[in-house]
Length: 120
Image (cartoon, rainbow, N blue to C red; front, top):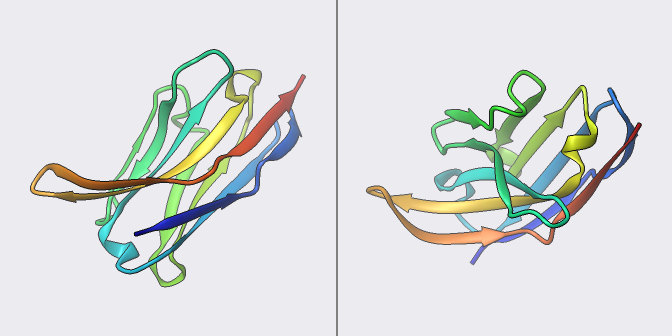
């Protein structure tokens, strides 16, 4: 079992920056692929960025060049640095941990979410 706790959301002006953090409890954090997802009002949850257990990263086109995902296995933590924030980035941001073995998702865990609001 993995528990994820996000922090760092808040209100920021357009063009500003925020850093989201997610700390995981439980064993074997380094073995999980980690990701950030977001859900805007009235929309489906969507992928923002992922980082594999090997450190490979993937980003949604809408955030490429503006957001950076990173992980610190020693601290059981994954972060999302967000810059040049836009009104379109307003959403609840969720941390996700997936255990993937031979291409199959054996388990998936979600945090409770943290709100990001961008004012114009």
